[in-house]
Length: 442
Image 1 (cartoon, rainbow, N blue to C red):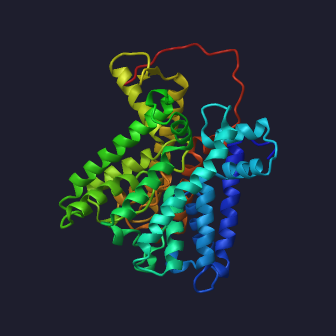
Image 2: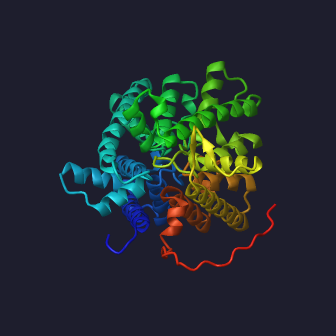
Image 3: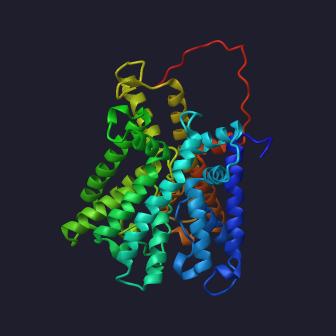
């Protein structure tokens, strides 16, 4: 796409994919009853699938037939890996030359740390993805065989494995009860563990995969990025699970056996960081759990992954900045390394853009419709973090409110900063700088 910047190319590419998906889902051959689907319902679903969110205005199983489900699954796969990654992989497969512009585009799409090695990374991403999804699909198929025939079990295994790995959150469990997600499998160890592992692997990022695959168990050789991502992911996963258990032990977890409580707590923590599945009734969350989930949704996964949110690295940089200021230190040090100032600027920008988007959206939807603010905050956090969890108000949103959620899902997938940059021209810095003067802060 000549004449467009890298961020504009990525933003436009996702927009085109959403438009194609919307058109296909509107066709009568996509719906179960053979009728046309309304533009807004199709647009919402296509955006949610492409942006790997999982919010739905119609039940995926009840409304869409096999063709519609295949379209949704393709959108999830393309949205999860990124159309740039998939396009470049096929170009490499066809032995086309990958120029400098293409390499820059790959680096931008994957949030790569450097230009060198991006082609090699793309060569690895697709095979690894198919391997992880294939193993997950095989295990899930065996579990689903207990409740359905071989053909359905295989399709359900593939669909949920891809949806979990790409952090899509779409499910076909409307076969048993509308909008029920994985509630009926809340105490199934195999289903819970497989789904959680796929979510985590998809959410830690392609750069981390490559680094771990290269250096194996030699942790000291890992990139600083990898160390931060793995450490933060572990803390958020188990810390979130502990808080979930403490907040819900007298509520949703009451009456469950130990296995159900442990699995539900872990699943509630993992899925909140951009996956969208649920094994307990989200609408029944206590106020404390709702706030915890909103925070986890806002943080999200890691850069260059299938996840959304402000990302784990952004959180760490902001926390280190606060700690350094409180200790009156100039440098941000972690794992024996010093972070650069550019990381602080980007982290602050991403955090504030997402925060302002969330505040504006919550205010607008509350002004448009008489929902409880905590329900709207949860919905907005779910959309901008591309999570897909809801307390149940998604289907009651008005036309304008749905458009707000659609825009948030889109921004959440391509990155709020990238979305802003796609409308702004980067101007060359001038030699003349204005006089500096201090102001009082705090």
